[in-house]
Image (cartoon, rainbow, N blue to C red; front, side, top):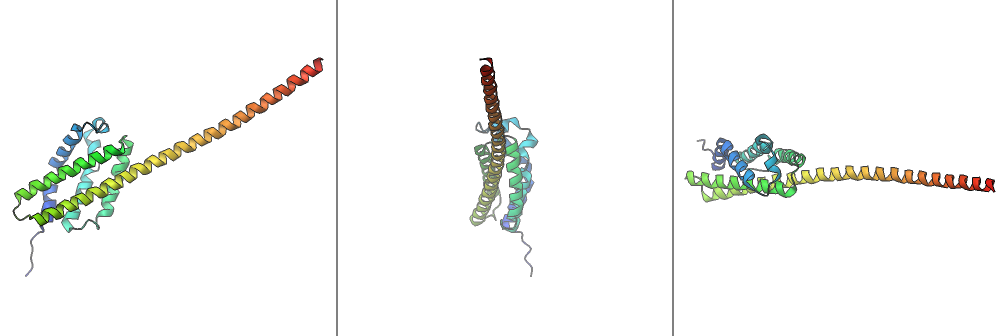
Length: 196
């Protein structure tokens, strides 16, 4: 006999998918209401939400199969995009971390809400779901931060290269000015000598 029951974590993933818009709204309100997220206030709804749907879907896919490892590459790809977009939007690392922490809080609240509604969702299921959420958001946060730091380092290297080239050009021009000064002094001495 085949058991066709759907796993409780898959049911929770279905709940998250069904509540995606509401959860996104909750997160957006939390972000816009956070005084420490200065750059978020400058963004449109679409700019702020950017890769949130993909990250949320990655979490749901992990919950569906109860395995983060197999969907981790896709989650990391979306997290890198998220980090790059936030870097270009002027986010500081602490703003990125705070934004993702608020997302984690919204998901934790959604888990509590779901667990209180579904009598078949045991404490064991809740612990597993909580761990999956935490691990997923940890991957997203770490990968996004790595991307921001990588972009920052690339920009620093670019500016350092420009400064080194400018410094080299300045050194060459200073040398040329020094040679012109020596040439002028030589001519002046020669003229003074000839006039005597």
